Image (tube, rainbow, N blue to C red):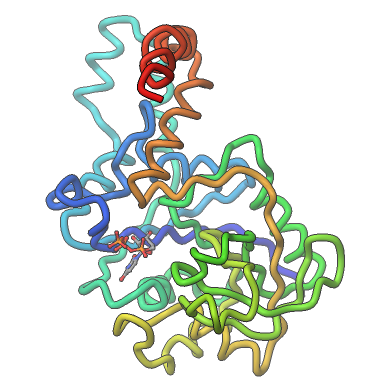
Length: 295
Ligand code: UTP
């Protein structure tokens, strides 16, 4: 029987060490890009594909995430009394979905974080969205992946070509292109050295998983960095099940990294209705001339 994807898991229990000290007492997922936290972009992406149940894997100092998606009575009353209807609507919309929160006791790795979602996912296929990988809302990455899932009823990973010197930051695949930009994956390695990487095609932060992954994760020992790696479990899954990948050619920002975060901020500010004109004018009149002078 074919099943559609109605649930999304958002792992948000990492330590965010690349963003310290900002992430010491507040979660990386609450860092804003212009006026929305990373986790809200991720939730809105899932919403666009009719996903209605959101499962957050949280850890230490993650209360702010729960509060962000919770009903905010005082704030709503205040916005109402000031006649700020549009903002009130935006705030309300967020608290109307079904959210489940699961605490990952210790940050034992992305694979372990996903295993924590098992009691809520049960036997359904589900999407995994890493909110620090921001996909431009104009790109249809998750839509393409859901389409491939519908066709093959199998695991689908988001893939992207990365420069050789960056393969040691990602899970890297080997595979055969079965259709334009669709790969049947034959092998995967977590964070290989450039010299031993099977390709330059990296797994990025979107996955459509089937519930088969849970039994494999339960048997997956800690791998690179002493963490239970999702890539290792997916490699284990390959022994029994096909795994596909979609090669993404759109815009992605690694907002878990300072430079990626800054790039996302500039690009999103240039598209934001309330600041784009002023911001563009500022870059053109103050920043770019100064940088040109320094050259
Ligand atoms: P990262 O590799 O970005 O790790 O995790 P991190 O801890 O968040 O950040 P750095 O590297 O220390 O700066 C990828 C995703 O997996 C989640 C993170 O929250 C992030 O969304 N994650 C990672 C967990 O939920 N639990 C873990 O144990 C590890």
